[in-house]
Length: 189
Image (cartoon, rainbow, N blue to C red):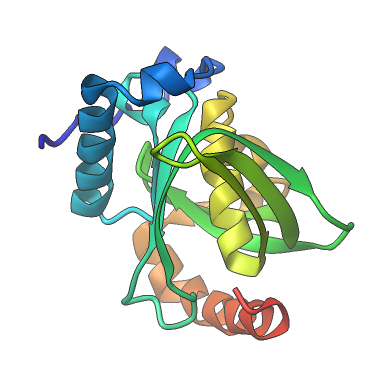
């Protein structure tokens, strides 16, 4: 396995709409090694997810894993998604404070759907379909946005919420964690 370089905001690859992968392509040893590298890179960088386009490969593939130490956010097992599609279920939204490995040291409030259905394929090409709620739903939306060439900054509706990671911790994290716990209590994830 190898650590991959993460594209930073302003690089054109982050604005490309990623192309779908085939089941045959997904099964190749080369793409399976790439998945391992994507997971290793996400974990090394401390991310909750990473899309292939963030490492200069615009294919519809992403990985997600929500692990401790975030006490307010439920854990989610490692998930590899090929060709994911997100559909909102219901009208409820919530404001999620987000950061991104491709937009280092910034955070901002982003409206996200509270209840979604995600469809795609697992790493082995089998069908994946789940209903996901709350904070976890926001993470899935963030990663699928990358595959469409969208950054979370494009979805910020209140530009006054943009802050450095340090100032987020200093001035906004406590309020966000309290709100996130409410969302988790209501939605279970």
